[in-house]
Amino acid sequence: MLFNRSILRLEATIHVSGNIFAPRYRGKSKYKMGGVVMELHSDYKAKYPVLTLEKAIDVMKYMSANASPEGITITELSDNLGLSKNNVHRILDTLLASELVDRLPGKQSYMLGWGLYELSKTVPTYHNINTSDYISVMGDLCSRVSESVNMGICSGNNECIILCKVNPNRSTLISTQVGSVEPLHVAALGKVFMSEWPTKQIVDYFDTIRTKKVTQKSIDNAEQMISECLETRRRGYAIDDEENLDGIRCVAMPVRDYTEKIVASISVSAPASRMPLDRIQKIVEELAPACRKLSIRLGYRGQS
Image (cartoon, rainbow, N blue to C red; front, side, top):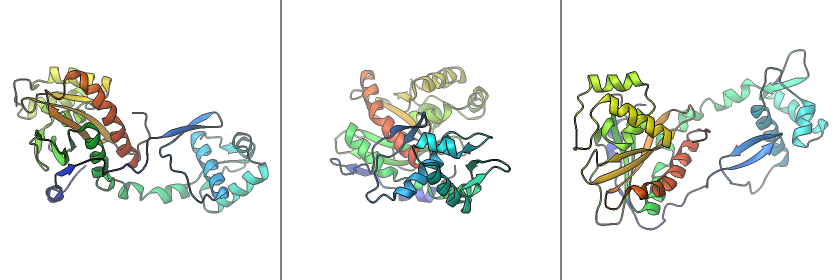
C-alpha cells in the first residue's frame, strides 16, 4: 500500500485528556439464521425500520451464508426465515428485477446476482485506512491505557512509517515522531507485518537489507526472527522488548482489510517500568478491540 509522505507530514500529535473520543459502535453480536451463526459487526438498531426491506436483507444474508452451486429454493428460505412462501416469492421477484439475485436456468432456485457486485465495487475505494477515522479509535484506546498509541504502515522499501501518534497527558512520553521511519525487525509495529511473511522473505530481508542492532536486545538475524514471527502469529500480537529504544517496551497488533491483508498495525508503547511483562496481556485486551474495530471498518470479517 502506497502513502503520500506529504500527507503524513500533515498529521499532528494529539494529546488526549479524558474520554473525548467516544466509539461510534461497540463490538459485534451474533444471531442464528437457518442454523448458521451470522455475525453483526455493529449493534446499531434502525430507529425507523422498513420491515419489508429488513426481510429482503435477511433473504440476501441467508443466501450469502448458505451459497451453493445448486442455489437456494423458496421453500428453504421460507422454512429458515419464518416467512411465507408467497412473501419470499415477492421479495425474490423484486430482487431479481434489480439483478440482486439470479434464478438458475431451468430450476426453481436462486443465488445472489451480479447486481450486488456492481453496487459494492466502489466500497474498497472509499473504505481505506485514510478514511477509517482511525484517530478517534486510537484516541479512545489512549484514554483507556494512558500510554502512547502509534499506527504504522509498511512502505515499499520494507520500512515501518509512523502514520499517526496519540499521546496521553503524562510526563514521560515516547519520542517517536509522525512520519518517522523505523526498521521492521526492531519495532513491534514492523514485526506485525513480518509475522505473515514466508520464511524465504524473512531470510531475503536479512540478506539484502543492512540490518543492525539498534539496541543490545535487537534481533539481527533471520533464524531468530523466524522464531519470533512464529511466536507472534501464535499469540496474535508482537512485542518489542527494548529492541528499538532502550527502556521502552511496545506491543502491537494488526489492522486488516476486506482481503484479510494487514494494511496497518497499532501499538501501545511505554517505559519498561510502566509496562512489566505481566501488564502486556491487559494492554492486549484493550488493543485487540481497537484493531478489530478498524479492521471491520475496512471490510474485514475474520475471527481475529
